[in-house]
Structure formats: C-alpha cells, structure tokens
Length: 453
Image (cartoon, rainbow, N blue to C red; front, side):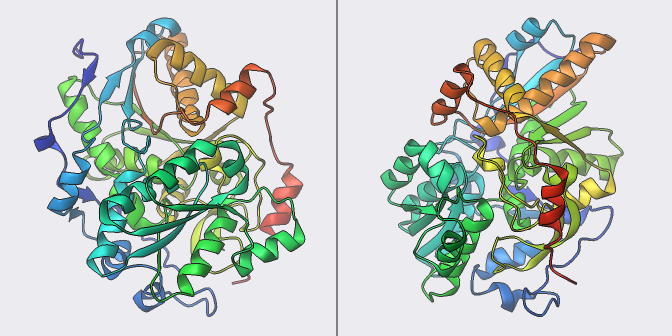
C-alpha cells in the first residue's frame, strides 16, 4: 500500500548526476534536421553559428546518459531536488479513489522548470567563450529563466518576447530586467524578420515562431552572439529529464508506482522532462505507463497538426525539422497560456506520438482555468495557465477513476506558478475569457504553406 506521506523531498546528494537521453531507446530512429536552403541533412557546421559545440554534440548524441557537470549540480542545488506532493486535499474534493501526485517545479527562482536547461545552456556557452545570447519567450518563463542563468555567469541576454504576452505579463519582463536582461516586444523593428511581419500586420500579436525568427536572425548576424532555445530541440528536452528521474525516486519513497503520467505541451520541454524517464521504463523494462501530452484547443499541434518537415520559426531561418506542425506561419489566438502558443512540437515528442507511445489530448482554456482554481483552492498553489492544462487532464483522469472505482496513481508536472499571470485569473473571474478553436479551413491553409520537399 502507498505510504500516507504528503510530500517527498530528496536530499541534494540524491539529485540525478546525469541527464537521460531518450534517443538511445527510441522505437524508431529520428529524422535528421535539414538545411533550410538545400534541404539536405544539416551537420554540426550548419548549427555552429548559433550553438556551442557541446550542445551540438548533445543534440545528435545517442548515449543513454550524459553526465551533468559538477558546477551545474551545485547551481541546481539552489532549488533542486524539487518536491513531489500527494494532492490529498484535491483527491478528497473530487471524492476519487485515484492517488494524485504533482511534481512542483514552480519553486525555482524563475518560477518554472525552465532553469533546468537555461543554466546548462549558458554554462556550455561560457565554456566556449560566448558572452552574449539572444532568445525568444512566449509567456516569459523561458526569458526569465535565461536571464536568471545569465546573471550567474555574467552573460548578456537579449529576449524577444511575444507581444501579446509582453503586454499581458509586465512582471515577467521586470524579472528579466532585474536579472540584467534586455526584453523587447516581438515582432519588433530591430530585425528584418520583425519589420516584415509588421508591414503585413502592424497590430500583430506575435508568436513564438516570429520571436524565434528575430532572435535567430540577430545571433546569426553577429560573431559575438549565440542563440538559445527554451524548448523543442533534443538537448533542451535532455536537460529537463532531471524532473522525471527525481519523480521516479520519490514515488519509491511513497511506496507507489505511477499508472498515468501527464504534462502540458507547447514545444515539449516540461512534458519531456516528466515523461521521458517513464517512457524509458516502458521501452526497456516493459512497463505500461500511460503518458498524456495536453495542449490547448487553440493551438492543437499534436492533435491536428501534420507530421512533416517544417521550419521552427515563422520566417524560415531555422533548419527544417520533422515534427507535428500547424504550419510555420500559423498565428495562434491570444490565449493566456502563452507558453503553449507554438506552431510546432519537439521532433522527439512528435515521433513518439506518431509511434503511439504517447497520447495527445487538447483541452479548452476555460475548463483549464476551472481546474486551476479548484487546484488552488485545495492544494494552495496558484498554477501558471500552461500548467493548468495538465491539471485539467489529471482531474479528468481522477474522475474516470471515480466512475470505475479504480485506484490509479496519476502523476503530473506542475511546471510553474501563476503569480505573474493574475490578470488572466482576473479575466476568468470576470467571465471575459473565451474558448478558441481555429476552423479546420484555417489550419488547412496554414499547412498548405509547408516547405515543398
């Protein structure tokens, strides 16, 4: 029987000392990224203008475990290991026999899971002499995390923040400024990419694809600058697997074993972080974990996107990646879960969805906020709008257990707090939020613009 513990926090000495690389255990081999101009497989030389050599090696590695440098372990220890909490009060409110656990990543200094890779990426850039990095951010969690990491290593950080989130979430950009970063709204007039978008739509709300185009353009045009991405790429997902590895250890202390593992999904980083170590046991040990990726109906990349080669940005600066995509020029509605407004999905996650190893599910904005408020009123933490999608799915699975009488263990990643998203809660309580679902015809139009291969 599971223990009656409420929370398990591992000691610093129990923190994982290596990241798990799912590329070693994939049921089918991944498709290579392609050069945006030639459409031939992209090699290390094609990535070198943007990334340090160490991250390029991680991007293409098939080693099962990659050692975490000791300097990074000490920096992670500022907030890691993070707690795994049994949501007993929520269980009681739902009157469910299910056992609900959440991995609390919002206790990092930046308030989300993002510093797990931000620190690693800045560390490897500094090791190779890079002192200036550009990036994009949606809701501001990634930009905050990279600014935080840059402050540790005295690296200049410039963040292109999706305009709708820049306007909705002023305190996120203030966090970035406090840590020394420069944050500007995207699309901007500072790049050709941004100016081109503004010429077509002066009131563009922006998108992650557009912000990526701007950040990549600037990095590629300056010898002193590299680019850093907060999700999607293999090395980013790799760094986040410390989450799931800790969770597996903590469940052992609870004397329990997961049946269902859930993460919200935008680009794929927090979802991969919680789920990939569990999928490793499915592949290597014959475990039967049900793994669910939850995305917004307004940006249904995994559930309605096409598995095809596409650009990671809106303009076409990045390599082509084989992924679930809605089309690189798809502009999602201005929902408050800004971190989930991305047209594409991580190639590794896409491959596993295509293989049937992962279930993809879409939920609406208002039911997600319903779940977030119920969680806040039972467990205390106010979740980020992105994380509320995972909570929605966890509650739905727990209610299914109530109907069937089954006692399943449900584990989800609470990837960040919502302290800087309270304007979205204000709109929810005022009844001003609406549920968005793009017409199939608009998605079809966007998909018709995929690169011709």
